[in-house]
Image (tube, rainbow, N blue to C red; front, side, top):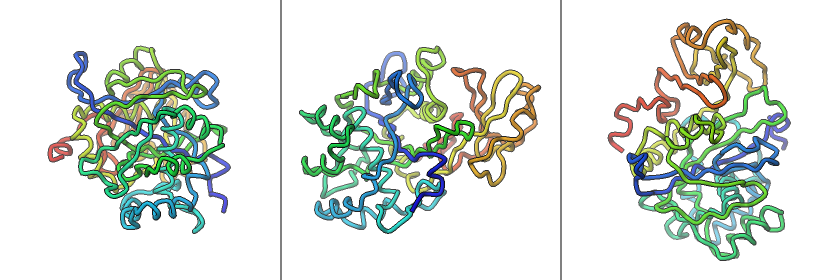
Length: 361
């Protein structure tokens, strides 16, 4: 069966990899760093941008062969089914369109894990007898022949499942936390992606093996430092990255973050598809819940009111709204986030107004 929006955009999955680190002098509040990489200049989508590891969904991710793979390794059906039981919002990307395909809640996690390995050599595995760890942290396996396997998977001469079969390992779908879901705005008709973001947390930084065709360079840094580099025009972060790093930037302790992510894991993800409005001094992208976000948006239509407020400043437009959930852009490197209501899906507040949300974590 052809997916409903297949001709309009591609499905993909990304992994926010966080690793414990000693607090640095410059940003001494954080005890963790985030893994990102800069795309090469010949990358077809957002060249030279700094992103989290991730990429397009592949048919191997949805193969029912994974069911027998897990069964042969004594992974219980109960543990697998628990991953698929989510109570909150479910964007279309999570819908499984046939009994001959693996449940999307599993296959999207496999996609994120596969891409993280293919691009950066990060291979997250779990003990087949204890899939969900007591701490909620993942484990990264270091391979002596990582480059060879990366090349095989990149070229399509070997599958991600074949890698785990050869290693007698189990991909760690259990210690990933569903984080958010973003859709490229409708104006980018030829290059749109609906992307699920998962969070993975490690107790130490693993060795990284960048794939040369896709990765120009990689680096670990705190959320605040990455945002500072973006604002200083040293790097460029795409809007979903700036949004996610901004709300991460208000959480300094990795253990607290894991407890929060674990508690929120099955509360769903409202699809975040920004809609643009032009202003006299910049651009505004509104998100679900904002007064300017159209009701029952079909995710395909252009904004007929794009220039409705074009002669007004961002501040003047903002003052006319009661409910705010928007990103105001002065230019490509300078954004301001506004949210004056409860975050969607019991998530972190993008302005850091988390109240008691983290106190009991």
